[in-house]
View: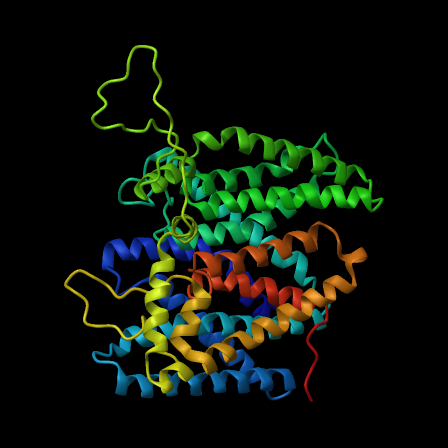
Length: 459
């Protein structure tokens, strides 16, 4: 039984390999058939069957199964209502989107059950999960390095901007995955850096960070900054809390050096050039001389005044959300002008769409919480958010109550990994609506909930 349960956790290590095989299948067989769809669907079915089997003796499993049955009912209502309202209605695309959304809930609740069973067997769930996360991060870092050396890396952008995704097809998804895994890889460095004589435990962190910089995205760069500052500030606070061990001092020094190196290297990174390209596309003039038509050429020695760059609130939003805010406004107008049935149970995939032009595809906002709300309405959104808010909220309260004992690298960096996942889900999407990413977030929260005994058996 222990071996079977461990397979559900060990599946985390296979995620990068599945994504590489998915890329290969996309190039060879097209988008209709991919390895990732079949393997992840099989995992979801397997974890569902496990919950059903354990429901014979576990009240908690029965509770989770009941929740998932309720979720299925909401999806059925969504389909039935929208088939009457939306014209055209693409059932396959709607169901495909639903499958992506419920993946998080099924894996999260299922992994809570798995971790509880393993913990009851006196198994060190935290150590093993951390090891699997670390291995997954190392595989991704190695793929990026090999892809760059061999010149086989895929481009992250089609024009203007620069960035590479290694052998991974979806740039947004692999960026989110790397940002979530980076704190766990940093945890490996902090735990093994016992003194300044052994800083090489941070090498895996550096390698994964280089891959994130190669992406050329704000998510990649921001993830590195946040993790380094978390270790830096966390180490400083630990020193103030009288935790003045050699390990804390060494990690403070290493994180400070790496932060300084990142700042020095920033002007040479793809994301730096991409930000200027984005700003230029918005028509913002960064300190260029003002053009004075009709005044002729400037006299020798005369300098033209520089135009002060000004940013409107719309331009700032565009820099942060990369035009997602425009889709959100359109979807919001569509939602609040829709029938009350759609406002309660959602408009389904991509809102009340019209038949797309040849070569065009239906568009989501790509901000996960917004997509949840407009797709599932008030009732569906509250139902989807309930387990996430309940368990995350309980953990935050528990952490705050036990701050003195829990303020260490493990809890800091696992917390940062979860918050990065939630933050990316809100701003850039492709987390809670992407099974390749949501499984990592589900595993992190499930581990913290079970490790801290925040879920009790229901009789």
